[in-house]
Image 1 (tube, helix red, strand yellow):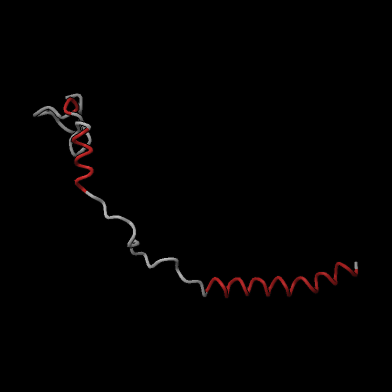
Image 2 (cartoon, one colour; image 1 turned 120 degrees about the vertical axis):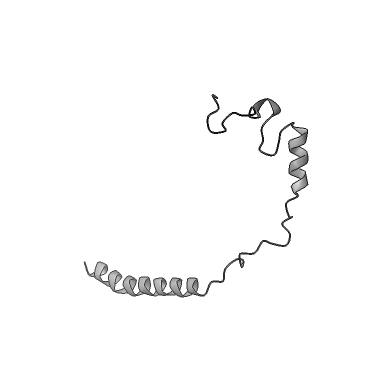
Length: 80
């Protein structure tokens, strides 16, 4: 029983100290980046997507010519 009380007397202040140290360290942490796109990340090439879609025989929406809407048909209701 005395050992348990002695451990509690020693561990409680250590736990409080550890929590305070963790909060202090985290409060001083710097963000990994400023939110801007890194310079090494290549800018997307819009013509690359266009060429890939043309090679696959699709339009800019990704549909094949057989899936193109019929003139006069409603876009909302494909049964028309």
